[in-house]
Image (cartoon, rainbow, N blue to C red; front, side, top):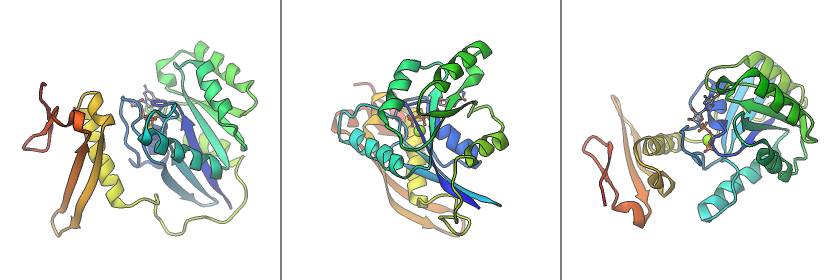
Length: 249
Ligand SMILES: Nc1nc2c(ncn2[C@@H]2O[C@H](COP(=O)(O)OP(=O)(O)OP(=O)(O)O)[C@@H](O)[C@H]2O)c(=O)[nH]1
Ligand SMILES: [Mg+2]
């Protein structure tokens, strides 16, 4: 039996959450085209005959500018501490030197696989170029090219991962696929809608708190507060059907 923690790191928007969801076959992490979507460490527990892999999605690595950023980077730090293997995700189109500088600054104590993501947006020559670049980096044990969005060979992927994991008993019993509560996922789904429906400044200045969560016979009653920064409060209005309408001024 192999078991271990495989933690996903990368810059904002690289596709970390998309990858976690693709691996788990479930939507555990919210996804958006805007940067800094993920704020917490989100674990996905994959238990199969012969192995248990606990994947962690983490917030995109940034220079912290305010308290929320600091908390987000704490989540990255915690994932650095218990990783058995790091997955360093890069968008094939992003600046390689900048990505490399960030990966070097992580001072990883564990092996890393560099994942070139979004290869559906690139051609073979640039994928090969990027693979050659990262292969030569000291932290990199292997490079794989994937498209978290349009699909990749999960069996090959899992084989590559298991090579780096220790023998051991499972960390989690039962058939849970995450360690987080339903309330967390509900609040995240609402936050995802804010990312979809509101313009740039609002998502970054909002938080969702679930006040009530009741599973009734025919429906689930959810009461949530959307907390918005005072500056942006005036800019939004929650419409009758729960949709967000942007008001000018
Ligand atoms: N074309 C393409 N788009 C992708 C791929 N993977 C992710 N995306 C898109 O990239 C955007 C960002 O994806 P996320 O999964 O939210 O990225 P993230 O790294 O979790 O971002 P943060 O949480 O902000 O750090 C979304 O619009 C995804 O649909 C891919 O393989 N190909
Ligand atoms: Mg994310």
